Amino acid sequence: MGGSDPGTPGTILPFPHARPPSQVAFDRPELLRILDLYGRMVAAGFWRDYAMDFGKDAASFAAFKRTAERPTARIEKRPSLRSKQGMWALFGEAGQVLKRGHDLAGVLSPLERRLMKVVED
Image (cartoon, rainbow, N blue to C red; front, side, top):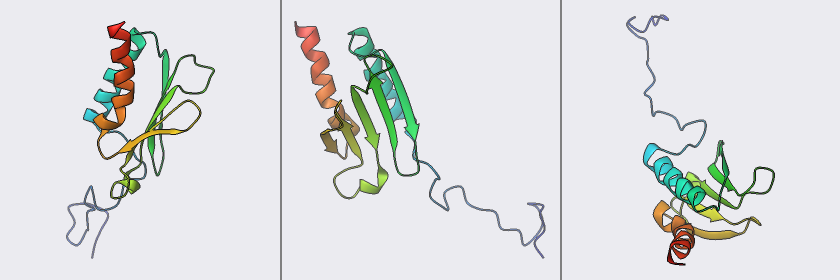
């Protein structure tokens, strides 16, 4: 009945979004927003390096002042929390949650404010 050739009658082709993705990732607008902030923080002298991690439950972007130390800030996207406290979280250097929310821009606002203070001085 169903052969291995996709054109063979009876073959079931999976839909691209039929099952959940095997890992969480940032979409293009999210990544552009994060990298734009990263570039401005590098220009202001706050950050020098970054790392990204894409796991089964969450995607994270970590920014570092120096490569060998803990991240100064970590932005995390955890879709399983979308309907609860929001899928976005901003963590500080000690791992404390600085901000949570449903909107990336709102979660990045403490970092944006820090950048604004540098410009005002």
